Image (cartoon, rainbow, N blue to C red; front, side, top):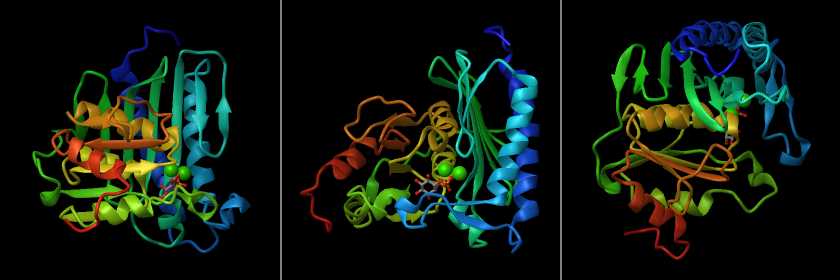
Length: 274
Ligand code: IPD
Ligand code: CA
Ligand code: CA
């Protein structure tokens, strides 16, 4: 495949791929035989992988390799397969593994296609609610065929904001605890829903007014970033500067609460209580 790729065709392909991956997750949900292995002993067993991560990933990667054999792939469990292509598939076969492993019904499949380092297509699939959040560059953001856009709230105190606690909190000072302690006292609501991809999908459709995360990986972010952008939202780093999916700290909002949220996230000296 070359640069004449028809992105609408690729999007149609992605609906099938995400749906099959979701079926693999659902076939293993609440199944005791789906073993949970600690992934990284450095993080004291916080980060885990299950047979569902692997089954979902196998299904996604085999479809990509069959249809786009020349493309590069970066996938959470399988790692990076570089062939020098401008096209890169970025795959999180199960975002929210800890939720999944506990039978908590909130997790997603996140798949993006990037060209020259920029996402051009993103799909986040929630197999429980059967929702597909997706965007094609320049084509707007959609949920199950319906166009969506970010919310209109312009005050943090009237907003609901999402985040995630990084696995690295077990051994690093990047815990997100001080940021959370500030935002939770200023926002109308704060949610840690265990899936950064769902956070971004929910910003895109207005269920959340904003979200942030640190120590996230490109496969947590790539699909969600283009979906938020296409929904009219704003993406930046902690300082409010434009950023990419390789950032260490990502803030995504409806644009209207962005500066207020950034100021609070950046200001270690801010009081928790207004
Ligand atoms: C992780 C989870 C977790 C978040 C991590 C992510 P995974 O993704 O979403 O909530 O704190 O930063 O990497 O392992 O479930 O795909
Ligand atoms: Ca993830
Ligand atoms: Ca994952």
